Amino acid sequence: MKPSRFPYPGTAAGPRVRRASLSSVIMAAALLGGCASFSTDGGLAPAQAIVKERLGKDVRWARSEGDVDTIEARVGELLSTPMTMDDAVQIALLNNRGLQARFQDLGITEAEVVQAGRLPNPGFSFGRLKQGDEREIERSLHFNLARLLVLPVVTQLEARRFEQVKRDVAMDVLSLAADTRKAYFQAVAAEEAVRYMRQVKQTAEASAELARRMEQAGNFNKLARAREQSFYADAALGLARADQLQRASRERLIRLLGLWGAQVQFRLPERLPDLPGQPGDQPDIERAAMSQRLDIQAAKLGVEQTARNLGLTRTTRFVNVLELGLVRNSFNDAPRQTGWEISLELPLFDWGGARVARAEAIYMQALHRAAQTAVNARSEVREAYGNYRAAYDIARHHRDEIVPLKKRISEEQLLRYNGMLIGVFELLADARSQIVSVNAYIESLRDFWLAQAELDMALIGKATISAPAGPGVPAMEAGGVPH
Image (cartoon, rainbow, N blue to C red; front, top):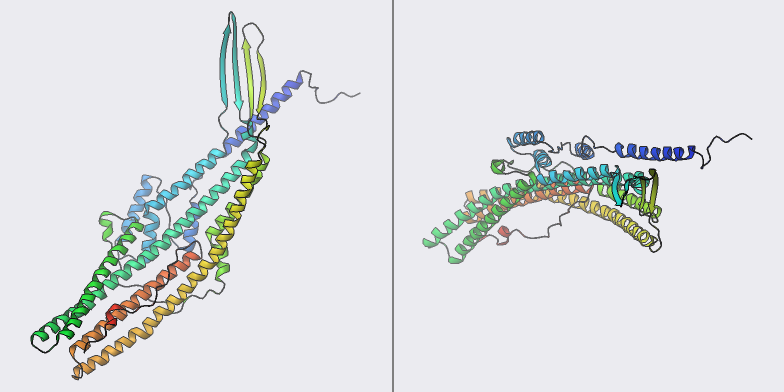
């Protein structure tokens, strides 16, 4: 009979085969542990690509003093001229310290991913025992074999979590850009409104002073003068509120831009951008949102990761503690001992059922949250688009109907005044009304650009949608014209 190619367990070759197999396992573990390494971009490349594609802006992670100097130089260059909306967004993406702190989550998560791909250091124990003249020296080297078995799965799970953090960071970058756009339009509109409210106050002040002198001359009654004084008081109050809004909106923009010191003296343009000729038409806006929104993509990724975690929990429900150890004992009166040992926790009391049930509940929770995210996304994008179209129609109505009509009325009143058909107070009242209509158009134009920013954000992620303002009558026009 032909002898077997494989040695029997009792032969001398058997231990060599076992030692070779164990050495192979250890070598494979070392290779697996050495595969994990840090990326050159720290995980910021996806966010940079998304921002470049959707906004045309640059994002930089200040990881060194050289990066900080480069950012400061770029910010100084952008602040040297009156700030445009694009300049404001670019400054925020470069200079906002909260965003820079958010980037550190990428570094933290990547370090955890790399750590998950590396084996823990082996343990070494050394013991020296003495009993009379006998001496025993014990040496052992231990490896976490359970960690080695689940290393590929854990590494994959951590890599998926890193991808989710990348998407979350990209979402935060886009949210900051949207908030900056809204704050910019609010600040520009507030400064423009202050200028018009000063004109309203000046006309009301002139009217009140004229009424005072005419009353002293006996040509005006107290009721008429009180009306003019009331208009002036309302105009002064409106200017004070406009000043307050202008300061608050400018400071909010400053916080988003991360400016301080002399940088806060930046200049804004005198007026908002003009209304576009036609509103954007997006008939299939829900489908576009479902394919583009990063929060939906992140929710899907979270469900997939949870499902994989559930599979891992089912696989390792009985393997909690599994260690492999190499033992080498030496004695002064006996031959040296070598060998290996494995320790395993026996599932006598805890069979892992509770862990599996918890994982299944977490998975269903993630599934429902993902579905709710999709439902919210559809509703948000519909609401944002509805607000956008309504804001456009309102601003166009102010521009094409109300403001020209007030202007024609003012011109006709001027002709009537020149013909001595009306008095100066009626003329001043019409001037105030015209200025208030222009200020209302500024507010409607601001609301349109805010709605535009909210719609753009709703198409790519969760947006904060402002509630539409209720109908109202401007305070400066509610009093009518004194006679």
